Amino acid sequence: MKMILEGDIPLIPAIPEMIAGVVLFLLVWWAISKFVVPKFEETYAERTAAIAGGIEKAEKAQEEAAAALADYRAQLATAREEAARIREEAKSQGASIVAEMRSQAQEESARLLASAKAQIEAERVQAISQLRAEVGGLATQLAGRIVGESLDDDARAQRTVDRFIADLESQGERV
Image (cartoon, rainbow, N blue to C red; front, side, top):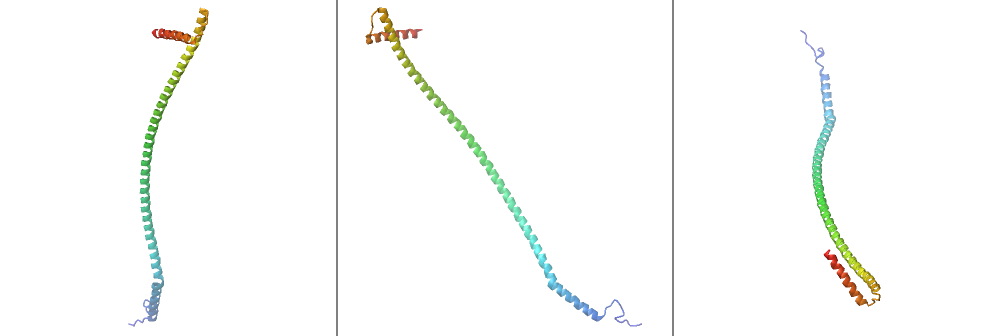
């Protein structure tokens, strides 16, 4: 049998090619590990940080939104309670105002009625006084014509007229 040399078998490479391949492999591996892998690691770390930061920001935003919603709901409940309280106050104030106005109107009505009664009474007294004077004057003139002499004595004529009117008033009370 013949001895197989290294160069004869195509599957086994020559030693210088193998050394050159190993050296180049180590050189490429060193270059990749020195330059490419750190860039990949840096990019990966940035993306991881960005994603983690985004998640944290989203969680914070969600918490803030939940807090804002709770605050909004609390403010809305407070505003509704305040509005109900204001409505109740307005109703009670309205009722008290109506009662006060009714009371004032009744007082004003009573005052006007008393004033009107006093004015009517004063006018009645004045009318009676004027009627007495006119009736007295007419009665003395008529009596003077009937008797045929003048009844100019004012005191006597006044007494006569007063007696006549008193008789008329007493007759009116009986009827």
